[in-house]
Amino acid sequence: MERTKNIGLFAIVAGLIILTGMIQSWNSALLIVNMGLISAIMALGVNLQWGFAGLFNVGVMGFVALGGLATVLVSSDPVSEAWAAGGLGLIAALVVGILVIVATGITIKKLPAGKMRLIGATAVLVGGFFLYRAVFDPAVAAIEAINPALQGNIGGLGLPILLAWPIGGVLAAGAAWIIGKTALGLRSDYLAIATLGIAEIIIAVMKNEDWLARGVKNVIGLDRPVAREVDLQQSAEFVDKATQWGFDPVTASSLYVKFSYSLLFTAVLVVLLVMAQLSLNSPWGRMMRAIRDNEVAAEAMGKNVTRRHLQIFILGSAICGIAGAMMTTLDGQLTPGTYQPLRYTFLIWVMVIVGGSGNNFGAVLGGFLIWFLWVQVEPLGQWIMTIVTSGMAEDSALRLHLLDSVAHMRLFTMGLILLLVLRFSPRGLIPEK
Image (tube, rainbow, N blue to C red; front, side):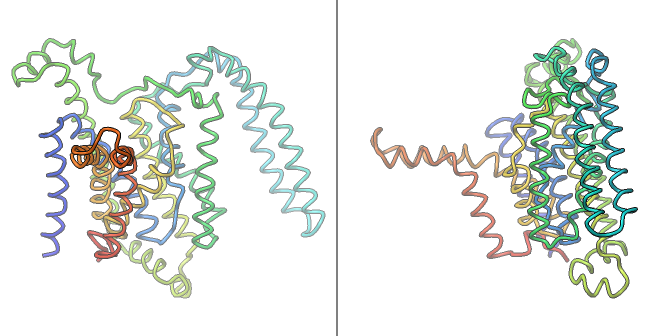
């Protein structure tokens, strides 16, 4: 019975997407599928942290952004002029920064606890900071002066963009390790504040450090793992096949590219879902849920709670980083200004809560369902309001107010869905067993 219900829920979401293709266009339906797959992967990462371990991470946006940054650093061609102008300076600044951190650690270790340790560590940090900036600032200025209209950054490694997906996960995992070592000892509400603040810092760095990925100037024209529409339209073989199937070449090329992305994203989701399910049903998964349910009892049984929290925090963040790299690949550009907590943190949490916290299939269902509603409720609201106000005068204040309120349909719908699910199915549509 339960299995039939779960299959039925997935069938309903699939039916809604198919209906979109029949009523609107198959391009729109495939775009919803692609972003639904990426959203499901993000929700899977958050579900690992919250559903398995009870970690309240509100910094999802930061890890997604790091995955996007990885696509630029991996797939973009290196800017040789920038490296010649300030590359050595950047490397020297990195070495200085590492040496300052090491020197601070040695100072804290060698000096006895008290005022002398505080003074010594502060002196090393302050002096090291000024030395670091003295090396770093001229190098950055030289790099950003190289063709700032089109470049002004160091570029990347020129590798295939598919390699950026796992590297995006590694980059997010590295950031999660640093954050986890400092913040995982905090209480859940303080952890939420800390992760949100650190995510905002990551976005601020990406926006303002032009030498890294052009900041708010954006990076466009990224490499693609699938064919480009223009190349397909110029292929006589493809045009012939599209004509045989009754499609014009432009529409056919767009559908082909989106479907190719769907296959790639589905493969990644299936692999991650299988791994998450194996982890959930393993002794490690049972241990994580035991820690989530009662940390004191788990610690009394000899489990290192902090270490296990760090472990799963890194794993969940890495999955979000992979999803961020996939999304930037699909967009073909990195736009740091578009990373907003509403879209890349709040919405992902809604997916997990609605789908079913602690259930991997629930997270996947929530990812597809909530993304579909996020995309479709505004045009649907516009259509409904047009019908409702059709008999009103053109200058009616009520009519104008209702039409202007359509823009808020997304937020209203998300809030309404949360209320309904928490009231009638508080453990989600597919609850944890």
